[in-house]
Image (cartoon, rainbow, N blue to C red; front, side, top):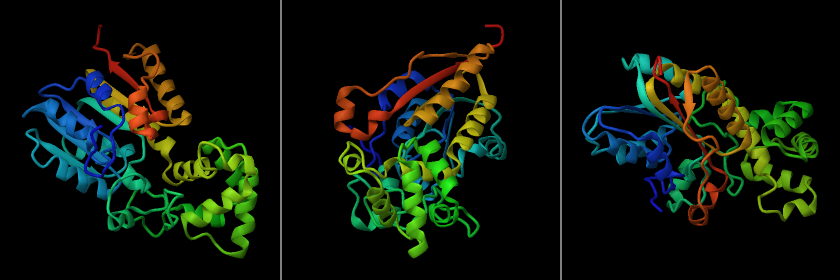
Length: 317
């Protein structure tokens, strides 16, 4: 499978290219550049015409994508920012509408610090606490340099109440041992505040039953997911970003979304269904497209990916 500049393998790449059907003259938005794997293929579809606009809150992702697209024939505009601000940023660029958009909601190997094939120095640059397999500062912010007032994962686990922690871990992580984990976090922080992802992961592991520790996924996986969602307000950003993209989408245009957990997928499914019910759009796939066996074997983290695509109907269609 093809890996991008970061060593990350883009998920459902061929399916995205086929269903978005990028053509010469399109205005294409990639709301989550990552390592630029999808972007590279989408830009090729433009030929020398149209416009490609790429977003990412992570400045490192923009640098990687800039290298990937250095020889693109079509004009390229890259924006360092959250995709919830698509409307404002496109207005700033003078772009009034677009025809294709992709939201890939997965974490890149670079951010996770896993399976990237990058040298240790690059791993150190990537470490922001997303991975429980490394000893990293407990940030979990997509922005490389969060402001002094930014809420980080350390802020949450060291200061928020036990009840709020349990609610977040259960609600955003769908973790059945949320209360046990929240209690263990509060007990541990009274002795020593959490500073690194490894410290947190060990506390979570010790708080769960022995049988849970030997499962297919690490016992900290769901809690880390919950904290990442809370820190970055991922569901709120997704709702706002999709709504803004839909408003700017030209009739006949398409939006594709790759989600990786049920909370995201339910939100996307609900929004797509509402647009279809109102006669504004048509879902191109009634059931989400999922990776085939070959892709999952080659890239195990693709196993939870779901791709949904909707087309905006032309007026009077």
